[in-house]
Image 1 (cartoon, rainbow over the protein chains, first blue to last red):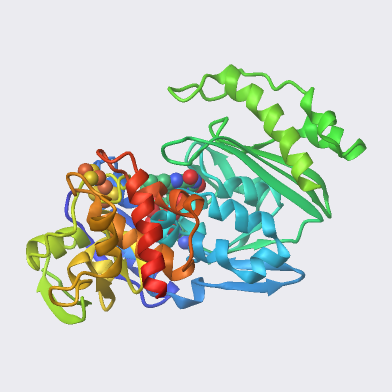
Image 2: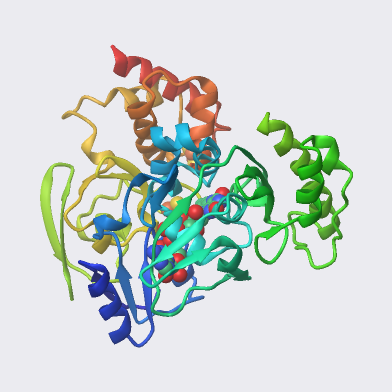
Length: 264
Length: 155
Ligand SMILES: Cc1cc2nc3c(=O)[nH]c(=O)nc-3n(C[C@H](O)[C@H](O)[C@H](O)COP(=O)(O)OP(=O)(O)OC[C@H]3O[C@@H](n4cnc5c(N)ncnc54)[C@H](O)[C@@H]3O)c2cc1C
Ligand code: FES
Ligand code: FES
C-alpha cells in the first residue's frame, strides 16, 4: 500500500475542506472496501478523509413514518436496531446477511451505496424500498442514484449523510449468496410500497436494476406464480466463475417468486 | 510521521507510524504483540481479529490511525497470569486447534459472539464463524470448543 495523508474530519465542512485541498482525496468510512482496494493498489489516493468522528452521520431515527439511517451507521447497528426490526424488518435482515460479523462491525451503509458494487446488498434495499439518499447538497431519489458499474450520481465533493427509507407495506429480500464472501450472486428485493410494487435485483447486472414486467404482474396479482414464469433475458447480465448469465437470469425469476412468498 | 495513541489490553500506548500502518502491523511490529496473526491480508480469513471498543474487527483492514483513542483487546490480554481464559481453556480441552494459526482470531471472534449471545447453539456458532477460516481442523472441534467455552463463562 502506498502511503497517504490521513485526516480525521471534525465536521462535514472540515471533511469537504480536506477533500478539496487533496490532490486525489478519498472519503474513508468503514474501510472494508476502500482499504483492500488501496492495498491491492487498485487505488492510490493521496489523502484519506475519515468520517468516523462525525457523530451526526451516525444513528437511526424515526422520520415521517419511515426511518432515517445515518451514512456512518454500521451494518451491525442496522441489523440489531429494535427500530429497524420493528419498522422495516427486511432492512435489518438484509444488513445481517452482509459478509461476516467483523465486516458488519465496520462496514457502513454510506460506504456501501457510494461504492455501488454490482453484487452489494444495500443497493437492492435502497432501490426496492424507494429510498432517498441525502447528501450535503441535495436529496437524490433511488431511481436516479445508481448509475452503472461502481457509478452513482454523487459528485466529487458530495458526501452521503443519510438514507431515508419509507416504510413498505410488505417487503422481503432473498439472495443467493456467494458461499465465500456472502456477496449476492443474485439478490431480489420485492416490496409493496405506497407508490406501487417494486422489484429490485442486485448481483445480476452491472448495477442494481428494477424489473418492470414483474412489478406490473405483481400489481395485478401479488403471488409467486405471477413472477415465476417471467423469463429475464440473459443478454448483458454478469457471467463469471460463480455463474453464467443464463444461470443468473434463471435465479432472478426463482428468487423473485421466493421473495413474494416470503412477503406473506 | 503522525503519532497514534490507544489503549491495548488496558495499557496506554503511543507510537509514531506512517499513515498507511495497519492496526495489525502496529500491534505486531510496534508493540511486539505477535499473537494476532496475518493469514490472508485480504479481509477474508479472520486470523487478525481483535476487539476495538468491544467489537471484533479484522485488524488487517483497519488503519492504526482509525483506532486512535480506542480500547483495543488482543489475545495476549485474555489470560490471568498463567491461568487461561475459559475460552482458551476450552480450545485446549476440546482440541479446537491443530497448527494454531487461526486460533487467536477464532477465540477473539468467539468472545464477541458470547457477548451478544451467552448460550449460542451449534448453528449460531457456525454462522458466526463466517469470517474465520481454518486450514486444519474441519471446524468441528472449534465449534465444540466455543460452545463449551461459552458454557464455562456462564458459570
Ligand atoms: C470479506 C468481505 C465480505 C463482504 N461481503 C459483503 C456482502 O455480502 N454484501 C455486501 O453488500 N457487501 C459486502 N462487503 C462490502 C462491505 O459491505 C463494505 O462495508 C461496503 O461495501 C463499504 O462500506 P465501508 O463503510 O466499508 O466503506 P469504505 O470502504 O470506507 O468506502 C467505500 C467507498 O465509498 C466512499 N464513501 C464512503 N462513505 C461515503 C459517504 N458517506 N459519502 C460518499 N462517499 C463515501 C469511499 O470514498 C469509498 O470510495 C464485504 C466486504 C468484505 C471485506
Ligand atoms: S489477515 Fe485479516 S482477515 Fe485474513
Ligand atoms: S488450526 Fe491450523 S488454521 Fe486453524
